[in-house]
Amino acid sequence: AEARPLRLFVALDLPGDVRDALAATGAAADPAVWRAVSPDSLHVTLAFLGSRPPEDVDAIAPIVAAEHHAPRLTLGEVLLLPPRHARVLTVTLTDPTGALAALQERVAAALAEAGVYTPESRPFRPHVTVARLRPRTRPPRTADLQLDPLEFSATAVILYSSRLGPGGARYEPLVAAALRS
Ligand code: 3AM
Image (cartoon, rainbow, N blue to C red; front, side, top):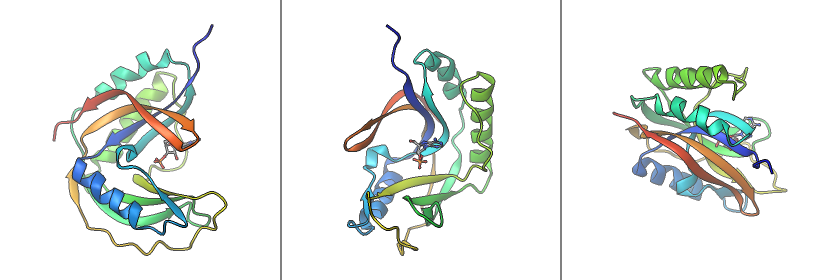
């Protein structure tokens, strides 16, 4: 029998203190409206590959492992996305050197070259989803949350498989490559 497809995405991993700050922001949002993302699920999506045959992991692993230098980043602002009919509460990332944008472009181009990814036409806007709108809930217009302007280095590039379940998506790391800061 054929192996089941995997729902794959490549993401940037964050230091523990940054995860803690982001988890606190998710937890500070109105719990009647938002469900906070658990600290171990927080990430910065670089490329969402969607449903792929498991064999593709062999082609993706060296692309994930090819990255070496950690982009230096800052937490930006709390932003509801999409803007008019928010589904998620996010924290944007500021990329003062452009290193993250360059890394994302390299990874996306290599994945496309390997035939496992179709690049998105919309621009890459780095963010971390910290809470998701509860089902059948009207999205608010603003979040009204404060954020400390933390500065940090990303820690790793990770290939995740996402399993959809009753309690939301569960992310399992398949390949992880540490970044040097
Ligand atoms: O965690 P964030 O918000 O960066 O929204 C999904 C999540 O992004 C996104 O992939 C990440 C891991 O699930 N995602 C899910 N389906 C998607 C799709 N069809 C998608 N991104 C683009 N196209």
